[in-house]
Image (cartoon, rainbow, N blue to C red):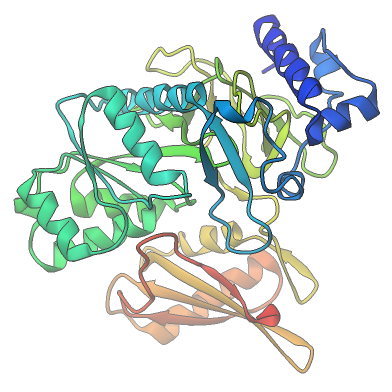
Length: 411
C-alpha cells in the first residue's frame, strides 16, 4: 500500500520535530540533505533505522521532545547487548491505550469482560499495555503478571475470568494444567489474546481446543509502542493494523526495496504521531506480507498476514541456510506429532549437527516416526538431522517465551 497524502503530512511533521531535536535520525537526515517529503517516491528515499541505532542512542538519545514531557520509559525485552530505552509522552501512552482498546474490540471483547493479564510488568511493554487497553475499554483487569500458576488458576475460577492474555507458551502451559486438574468445567474463559512470540498452527489449534476458546493474535514491539498495534478479527484473515497511527511497508530484506502487496518480506514501520521517540522506516526484521482486498468484517483498516518468522533468525548448518519455520512446517505434516519441539545445534571437531526433539501426540512407534521425520527434513533442507520423538510433556514449558532454538556452538 502506497503512503497517502495525509500520512505524508504527518511524516513531514515528524521530520521537522526530529531535525529540531537533532537525535540520531535528525543527524542522518542532515547528512542526506532531506528535510521533507512530497511523494511516495520521496518517502522511499528516506534512510532506514535499525535496532542498533536505538542501542547506540542509549539511554535517552531517542527523545524528540522536551524531557519534562516524558512521563514513562520502557525497554526492549532482549537479554543481550545494550538495552533500548523508549521514552513516552502522556499522549503516546494515551494513543497506545486507544490502539489496544481497538484490539480488544476487534476481538469482540467488551466492558463486561474480565481480563486476566499474565504477561510481565515493569520495563517490558507487555503487561502494562494489556492493562492500559483494558482500562480504556472499561473492562475488569486482573493484573496477575507471569508465573504462580496455582494462583492464576484460582483467580481464573473465583473471578470467572472470561479473557486470558498471555504468550502462546504460557497459554499452552495453562491449558495443560487445566486439563490435568480437570478444571475445564470450572472456568469461564471465552477468548484468548496471544502475543509476543510466533506460534504454529498446531499449537494454536491445541490451545483453542483444550480451553474451548477463540484465539486472537496480537502484534506489537517495544520500539513501536508495544503490543496492540494490530490484531486479527473473528474471520482470521490476517491482522488489522492502525494506519492512522502507523505506516507499514514490506521490503525485500536483501535489497531494501518495497515489494508488491501480497508478497512476503520484512515489515518496516514509521510512527506517524508518536512524540517521545518517533521512528522513521524502522526495520523490524519480522516477516509478513500486506494482504490486498477487503476483509469480510468490513473494516477499512489494512491487514498483514501472521508473522512467519524473522529475517535474522536464519541458522547456518553444514553450509546450509535453515530457518526454524522450515522445520516447523515439516513437523506439521505429521499428525502423530504435537506442537512442541526444540532444535539443538552443536559442533564436534568442526562438524555441525542438528538435533530435533519433538513431542508425540500419542503412543505410536517412536523409532519408526523418528526415521520418517528425519527423512522428510532431509528432503526439505538437504541434510539429515538427528530426531528424537519424545513423550507429551517431556520438553520444558515456559511462563514467558519458549526458546525453541539452542545453538550450542556459541554458548
